[in-house]
Image 1 (cartoon, helix red, strand yellow):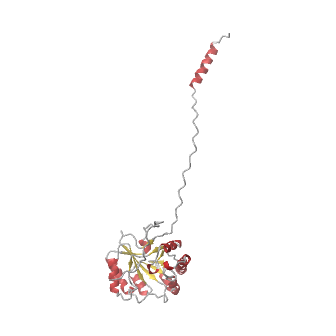
Image 2 (cartoon, rainbow, N blue to C red; image 1 turned 135 degrees about the vertical axis):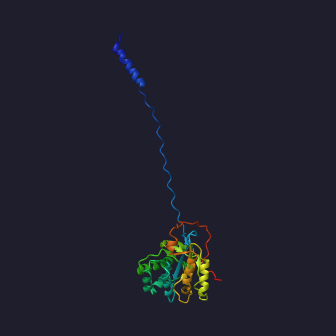
Image 3 (cartoon, rainbow, N blue to C red; image 1 turned 90 degrees about the vertical axis):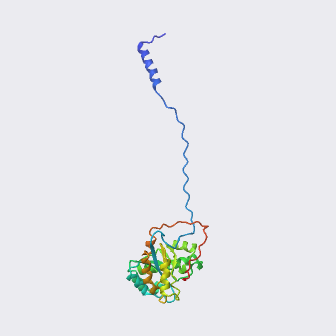
Length: 275
């Protein structure tokens, strides 16, 4: 039997000690593949769009708006505009496309004043909810957009429905033409030619509320609008209101992208009877 030398014994002990000190980590099981998070659902389309009647009720602001309706005569009451300029009153003018074509020089002149903002009042002034062809609704708006842009270089942002008549379908179609439907919360009643200027003034000044939008007209000299307007402006300012354009009135407003479809249909806004 072979005898081990002291050197062999020493090497053997070192090898055994070394192998005892080396630690090999155990093999970990493979992690199961992680599932990807589900993609967020696509937004649901809905045929609704805002119908604006007022601005913030927390600010003492009122917007005076004036419709230039397309009619057989397409009149223009320059006294209304003169009063706005003389009193430094900003206003939003809702222009009918037919009215604009009949008064191109007037519209070009109005565009020179930065305190005037232009809105869209359709081309031929129809009862919009009764226009059942969607394409014709859009054409009423787009034709007016084109006319106003051609004459002034401005693109209206707001649509005022004739007679205050609008439903969800019309408002949705207006939104497809990049227009926000803008009605009002205070009909002045100025188309009623039996109302004298003082009653018109008292009504508007008394009924105006913070964030209010007042509708008046600039297309008929038989209306009491021009006679009442100086005292309306004075009375509103005396009550502490700042008179602004619609754009300024709504500058801090955010629009809902979709409203619940089960909401009840709102009735058309019509002029109240002035007592």
